[in-house]
Amino acid sequence: MDIDSIAVVDVLLNYKGVFGTDIKENINCQKFNEILNGKDGEYLKNIFKLEEQFEGGSNELEEYVKDKIKKYINDCNIDNLSELIKNRKSNRFIRTAEYMILFHH
Image (tube, rainbow, N blue to C red; front, side, top):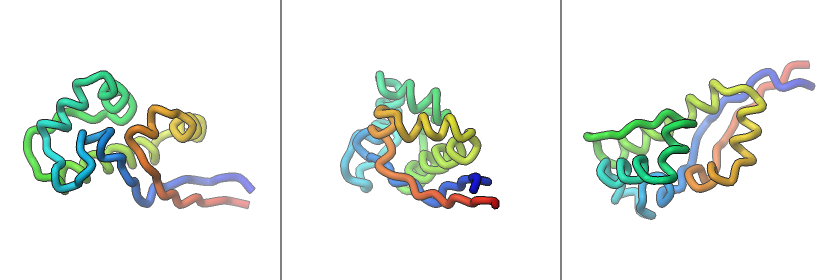
């Protein structure tokens, strides 16, 4: 069987890597922007196309990041997806992702 398509159902983020905090309630734009503008932020900006955010609460900011990561995964080819899964750097930001894989016969 061949894989027809892969869709991301949900993404669980490593809050410390993405937002600089272990607690969801402490997510804020200022700290997120500091991470983005730091050494590791280049990966987030280049791969997932994340941009600085200046308004929104913790839920909105978390959803923004999740949506960008889901979009990247859903749009990338199987080789890029495989590289993302194997890349140790991505593990700093993504704890796990739930996929729905559709096969064709």
